[in-house]
Image: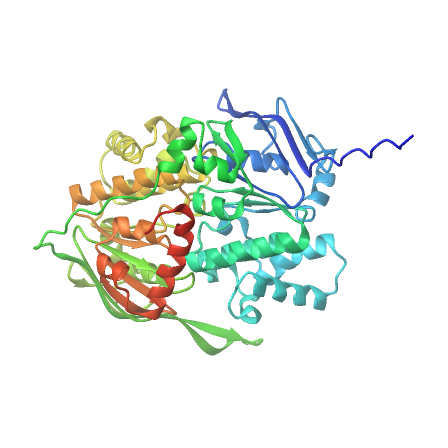
Length: 546
């Protein structure tokens, strides 16, 4: 008589009938309703859906990171390697988090400690879960920084988060998550802030590490190109429910649910309104330089300079969009901040024909009404202690615009313009999804009716359908108000849909500039051609071209 077959091992992760309920100001909201799925060892499963669909809330539930008692699980089970995680004590979950299950968070600036260096933050995970010497920790940190493509890791390990670009901060988050070689990696928008060339490197890195370590990945993203590259199975969520799941190939070629079909059809399209021939120049810079000192030693002596922006010229007119592209760390964001006089710089900066380079903060204050910025990280730029209404109205109060009642009306109109319910002005930023927070940031900038708007990756946190809506909104506002945009993005599809002219940056300098059609159809610099080639390789999987 043959022996009984051995029971099959359980899936690595089992989520069964998961419910998540939030208690908000006397009312309850079921953010996740009856979600069930499994993840096998070594498998990549993508969880997709629009902002607010419940993707990130589901992921945070796995690690038991939702704020109790404001959030609760009225029903459901979450089992990791057959062991129940729901309701386990904090001490037990600390042993799991960062060791067996790691997470790359959506917003690296808020997830990283601003008071600690890169080395200390990556090393913390190693010290908590591994008994390593200081020398071993440093060697492992340098190895991880090289793996995720951080340039000059020996220097960057000493840097603080604010000294890194958005893409570099994202790569530091990935290094932290991979430090202890987890069994399951939860990647919440892991390439949101990363340009196409680095995006391809990170995806290859995750695939290589997955093969070597047998690591499973739960990929949460709105970028369907990444899903098709990386995932074996796809789960589609909307309004807290799982509406479709299946193998990636089947879901992309034969989607069954109407919501899935709508999600796959959404992509940035359209062109900006034409610029009037007599449009005045709103902003102009000449020979702009931003150099940061490299300081070493006990006395912090300056031993060199990081030339973040090195001799850049630009002009943008009313009703015109100048797109700024380049890899992470190329100087795009630094250029935008310097233009707004938010960073010290050298060179001429003219706003409405007035050179403001030597102006004091007091002199600049009245001018700041006409030049606004939407930052790359919406959660980091929104005060957690202020309601949405207070955040959007703050600029009106500072500039003494309108009575209290008029400000409320202006705030309500601005929120409605960006697709948010004006009633949400009484809520706080943490109550919104990443995409909704980005729309709040756009409303805050628009409420002052500026002439110049610097948009630093304004759609990077948005899903494809909302991204298209926001781009349509920005184009409409530009045509209506004659706004000048400095549009910074790593997404070349967005740049083409929004820009009249494009400026390509690398290592702090402009390598190519011209009309958008000429740059995309006849790039002349090798670096521009490399950027477009990387984007086209990603797009080829989707069957479309930029």
